Length: 129
Image (tube, rainbow, N blue to C red; front, side):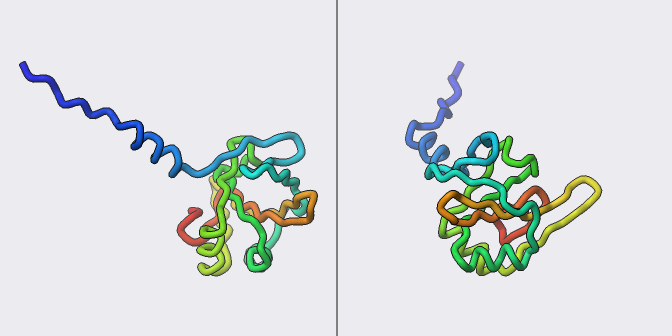
């Protein structure tokens, strides 16, 4: 009787998979903290697609709240390369259906930096669907 080959992943494969996963943070009362330690608080509950694109043009950070829970499940944080792809793709599209409601909000840090948060049913480039 022959044994099946061992198909376990190598440690290097596991590390590579972990490093490739999007960064997710847990919400804190009154805001969230990004992976770099910056504290963000909501400042405008809803902004237009055009405003989101303009803020990104001026250096805003971007995060995605895929389920629209306000961050309780965590945000997906996008770095400079992804932000460039989002900007190049044009304005995002907020979709509202019977089951899903999209929104884009503006958050600020204590130092005045701006964060654009796409919530739930927002399509922007190929990073949010």
